[in-house]
Image (cartoon, rainbow over all chains, first blue to last red; front, side):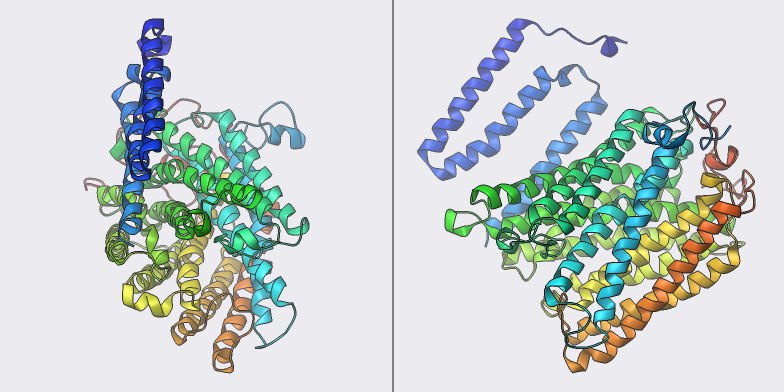
Length: 93
Length: 530
């Protein structure tokens, strides 16, 4: 029942998450100016983190049950596996 | 009152606005069948061309367009949606004791996306500077340079993909949320397990082809350079992204077919399915392993040796869950009281032809042999054994099996037996010849052929005549059954799953009272574990 009623997330939380997203974006930009390798590394690590913050707070995944969390994790893990396996070629060509 | 008659408004509008999963299934069927015949006609024309080694019937450019459009229509508009969109939509809710899918309106929207995608694909044939000539794979750099109507065809595939994602999402949610009381995971019919596994593949990998196709359009329009080495891009990245979707798509095509066959075999063998859990989990295993074998399409493309070795290993591994299914089907038949009705005949043909398709797949999955077989008729033969011999025959098996339930009419068996004979003989002559031609070195997609390949081509073309004759007899029987077939009983085959407990055709919301499930499906042998 609790889930069906929805959640009101406090503005303070939303603002903190927004600030974190801005900081992560600034880090991404900075990394892209330092070196291409660092830019790729930052993209592969910080972008999923940003996506996770959006999903977790803005899209209310935090308040969902384990099933839905598991499903989202499955999708993200699949993406990770695909990217990892792509590097089997690109990294060793 | 059945779903065919129910609902206030009559006529076409009542169908086009219906959110009843059964009506939507028929909407798909009515679109898929004409598209299937368009693609069959194109394939038939290509075979006719090979009656002669050189110029005959059509120009080389037309031939290129024909194999492209044949592939695009067959794959994106018949084989991928065939079993899930038609039989999945119709039977998933019924098999789990539900009145509809989780999101009925989204389900109708999926059909509209599908219809729009099909319309765009057909439009791409007659607009722009000619029908696309890239093959259904749209490989770069050719797809970026050809002047033919690639952007529209690619947009069509994008829209069709959207439809597929929404259907998959609906099936996953329905399986989780809509099961009747007592319908635990291990009491679900195995067709539902297959649809569930397929739904996950649809949701997880289809977005990747969507993005890839958008990149092709952006590359063509703005030259962004993602696939262009001159701008720091990588043409092999296109092949990776394409096959990350398109190899699992093969499992979107075959896993529901396996599920349908798993429903048919116990019914006509009068035996409880052997190895219920093994079959159920092998569907999930195929979905998972099938998603990480994509680069076996690229062994000769110049990717790294390490990737080649690892993808070859995974390719061998994916044969294991497929073999689990075949062994369990065989064990189900063992000592069964087999009733050789038309659906059973097509289902058994599926098992036989799928085995040939699967085993030839293992052969070409070996790195060394692949160099010889890549881009030859062997690959075309293997693919058709899996897709037509597998999914195609399973589609007809499912159609014949569930036809009495869907339409309330029985199909006369005798013409179907004749159709099966023609199809089975024609199919093996056609695609068996392809395997031999490929082994001899005949390259695929060639307009002309050398004299030493001519006997094989001749045999294949005669095979195509038999196959099409069989299809005509089959569809003639189905149409006759629709018009004047004998009325079907509620359970004409003696099936044990839920669809056979409701009237033929079913009422609008399937069940007057939602059933309570207290046993496993396929209860043919009381007292034995399923």
